[in-house]
Image 1 (cartoon, helix red, strand yellow):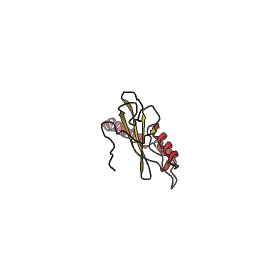
Image 2 (cartoon, helix red, strand yellow):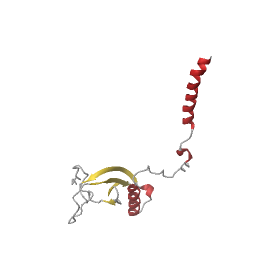
Image 3 (cartoon, one colour):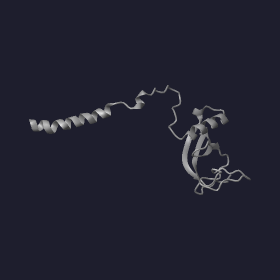
Image 4 (cartoon, helix red, strand yellow):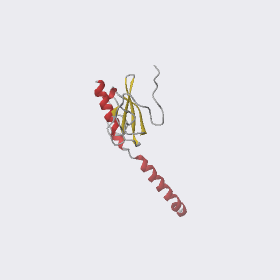
Length: 139
């Protein structure tokens, strides 16, 4: 019997400890449930995403909940134009780490570009994604 107590008791205590660790709730258990018919919160992302969503909602005169985040990509822009050069402008010739944020309202897609530290801006005529993908002129 003492052998069973020596070997069995530590195992039982270890199992109780492990099971007890999983019994506690997570921080998400305290979140308020969303009301029916309301939009759910967007997943956490870079702050530039929220700024781009707010800008597009204001431009289009829609609620932020009507703006859909299609994609968020970390990119290395080939120069200071951040993939959106304007004719006649000069840009630094250095690689710039940044983001390409694609949003949509209804069926229309919008590309927002930014550096990792800068504010996003609507790029109405992108020069293409880094890596050689160029926009098509078919049409």
